Image 1 (cartoon, rainbow, N blue to C red):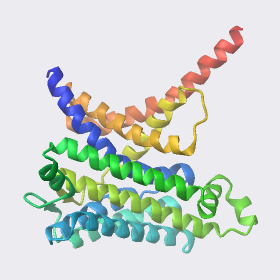
Image 2 (image 1 turned 90 degrees about the vertical axis):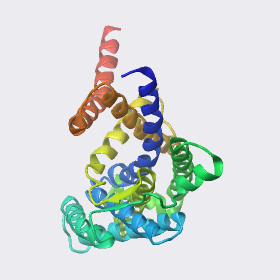
Image 3 (image 1 turned 180 degrees about the horizontal axis):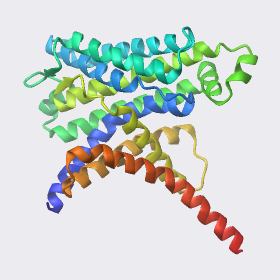
Length: 304
């Protein structure tokens, strides 16, 4: 282990963090805006990666493959939404059922559990060839472009009448329903958009890592929550209320910070099998930071 190896790992971690950050934006929509812990995430992430991988191997344009992956994510979110809103299945159970079903669906899509993309043109490889840049730089550029574009879209969408109803549904569903808004439609729309974003992330990650795999989304919901909490905790230290746009940026930043922590700890000798334990510890620490800060503030107030 040396500084150069840590620096090299950090470069890749930043690029990965941006691509996974798009998934985190999707998780944020359900977890923070709709107040739903959507377990579909793990399956829809792999769905995006599986769909994109098989399409690219069939000669479909990599960008078009990402868009089609987005559509499959919408369908996955629609299935979860229908189970929850129409069949009245609990939101968590509905997500788990979708996640289980998607495992088999993803294998059906690829015809096997893994589809390699070695020697096949992807967004990243095309950029490397045209600009003469490294894989990490290409992934970073793609992550920045997609990340910023989707943040701008979400900021605009949440400012529309439909977006405002979506946010209000998460804040006070009964009040919004009393105002004549169909909250079931809002939930359905939110779940669809969330899983669409998650599928985009899966598609980009598959192109970046060079394969699509049915297990690539395992633990995605936990990673997303860890990234959200990290981003919020970092910005919470400033003691200010930030705009929704800055909040979305903090979510993307949280994903990058999470990946940096993982990369550095692995370079320090931690086994890859311990990553889930590390993720749990990161979430606990991130949740504890605001509480500790509040206690310190109370003590200072009493001291005065």
